[in-house]
Each structure stands twice: as structure tokens, then as C-alpha cells.
Image (tube, rainbow, N blue to C red; front, side, top):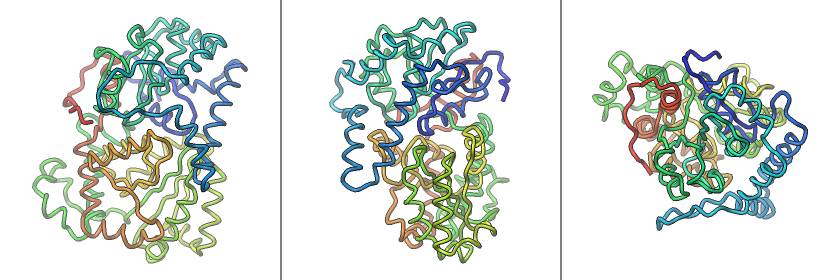
Amino acid sequence: MASHHHKSAWVVSVNMGYGHERAAFGLEDLAHGGIITANDYAGIPKSDAKLWRSTRRIYEIVSRLQPIPVIGPLIFGLMDEFQEIPPFYPRRDLSDSTLQLKQIYHYIRKKGLGRHLTEKLSKNPLPLISTFFIPAFAAEEHGYPGDIYIVICDADMSRAWVPLDPKKSRIKYFAPNGRVVERLKLYGVPDERIFLTGFPLPKSNIGGPEATIVKKDLAARICNLDPNGIFISKYEDVLREELGTELCEFKKKHHLTITFCVGGAGAQRELGAKILRGLRYHILSKKIRLNLEAGTRKHVAEFFQEEIKKLRLTETVSDGGVAIHYYKHRKTYFRSFAKTLRDTDILWTKPSELSFYTGIGLPIIMAPSIGSQEDFNRLWLRTVNGGTSQMDPEDAGEWLFDFINSGGLARFAWNGYIEAPTHGAYRIESIITGEKVPLATLPLIV
């Protein structure tokens, strides 16, 4: 998509999992010439590709091993120690570098990781926005002449996201929440290089500074999530004031829809099978629709197809009761997923960067975490009261509908919209372009 701004940026991501690319997708209007994938772009040197490939392979293998009893958590725990997030309290100086960080700089300085991309982008030194730390570190080390920014993709972060010497670095940060702002300060980043923006959610789900799309979708969603009118009757005046009287008709526009997401490494696909079993009766009775998001993982889509056959739910696929979403290309996936969310009433996912999507009024059912950063995302989501941890998925036909019938999930949807940042993409654009956007200052929610 071509930028409509007078000033654009190099938007750089990596295709490790989905989180970094999902953040970049929210900034596609800024992306000069399209989003650049640092570990898979045209002309990438073989040496760089090899280093990136080995890193990605280790991450994906370990993530898929994680659900395996005993050995999975043990292996994953060892990897997770390298990106461990230390306790926040008591506040103290956490600026000392780590072994992981020193290893990253060894690859950059001694093996030239990222030099080719830096030299390529330096010919047109636009602001460089990276949704992963390594391309930003490499750009600074190899002398990129333009401004360098990093988008933080979780509600808290490890020391690995900050350079060896944070006070001498010129890298600036876009923080998704107040906790990250405070964490960056503990890691030694000066205040003037930290911007509290919120996570860059897709603009196609927002509708400008006025959030016209969010309000329209939320009004319809609250209807589905509060069939007995318990939440609506209690807060109708507030809902009408915020969403507008013309949007607060609370009429059913689609069947209650749940979207379950499998992460980029393909882990937790078995959880999707358990959800199918738990909701089988409600699917057959056409009380709900279930979207199974396989992303770009064909083997995950095939696994879901087999589970549907085993549960004799094949006919429900043709009548829309169950949908498996699989995409060959990652760009197509992100665009289609954003569209799917407009008719989604409940998002069921591990607490990844998708936790921030509660900001568009989505209640989130949190699957088990994979990685310490997701534990912090879970804590943040509970703080803004935009979601809850799953109970036994095979009993979802009972507990999930208790949440719905009591108006509880409508409350989560409303809280997410009110308390979590929605306009991260617009705030980042404003900083890059210098064009002021009429948005309120974000509170320092930690």
C-alpha cells in the first residue's frame, strides 16, 4: 500500500513467529516501498541468511517442543533464560549488558550481520523503524545516517532489546504501554528517546482518530456478548455517549463468533482440537461460529481438518459453523486476519502481541503462555481487564457460555476498548511525519 504521507520510513521486520511482522503490518502506510523482512529480503548475503536461519530454526523447534511433558518445558526453559525479564521491583539500575546481547553484537561486529541491508537503506536515509532489535542494532553499528526506532512488541521486555551502551546509543523507542516506558528507563535509555504510543494495531480495524470502525464493530459485538442485556442495561447511557446513539442499536448482525489463533511456530494446535471438542454441541446447534487460524502453517490446517473429520463436524464447514483459515503468504495472512477480526466476538489466543488487540474492543481468552514475555502480557491484560485465562477447553461449552450469559465478556470487550491503547499506529505516524493527530495523551498504565 502506498503511503499517503509526505514523509515515510523504512519499516523493517523479521519473520520469526508472527509478532514482529504483525507490528510492522500496522505501520504499512508508512512503509516506503513495502515492509522489509531483514532475514529474508532480495539480495540478502548468504552469510546473513545462514545466521538468521539458524536462529529462527532453533526458536521454532523449541516452541513446538514446549507442549511435550517434562522434556518440552525443560528445553524451552533453558532458551527462555536467555531472554528472561527480571523482576521490576525494587527499581534499580538494570543497564548492565547480558551474555545474549554480547553474542548478538559479536555477530554484528565480527561477522557483519546486517551490514548489507544497512548500506542498502543508507542510500535513502529515511527514518528506520524496526520491530525487532537486531536490525536496529546493526543499523547503528554499521553507521546508518538516519533516525533509528524500535517498536516493542510485548507488555514488558528483556534487556536484549536495548544496546550494549544505552546512554551512548541514539536508538529511539516506541513503547506499547507504561510498563515498557519504565522498564526502558531501568535499562538505561534516556527519557527523550522513549515515546509512549501503544502497539500499532491495523488501521483497517480502527477507522482514524475517531475510531469509527472500532465503535461500529464494538456495538455489534456487545450485542452478541450480552444476549440477556445484563451489561447493556447497566451501562446503556455510557455506551450511547461513547459509541453514538446510531451505533447502539445492539442488533444481532452475525452469529456469535470465536477466533482461535495458533502462534507462528505452530505450537498449541492440539488446543484447537480440544476447543473443537468442547464446543462441538454449540457448533452443531448453530449457536456459534468457530474460526481456526492456522496462519501460514499448512500442517496446522491439515491437523484441524483431520480433527473436524474425527468429530463428524465436516458438514459444519460448508455451512459456516467452522472455518479453517490458512494462507500461503504471510502478507495475505495479516491482511485477512485483520478482516476476520471485524466479525470476531471472542479472540482465543496465547497472550502474545495479540493481547494488545483488546484495544479494539475484543475480549480475549488467554491460552497458556509460551515464554516469559507472555506471562507479562497476561499480567497486563488482566490489569486492563480485557480478558481472562482459559479454563478446561473441553468444558468450554459450559464456562464460556456462563461468561457470555452473565455479560462478563461484554464487560471485557468494553474495558479493553476503554483502557488499552487503540491508536498506536497513528501516534507513531505522527512522530515520524510531524503531522499532529488529535489524540489524548496515554496514561502511564503499568
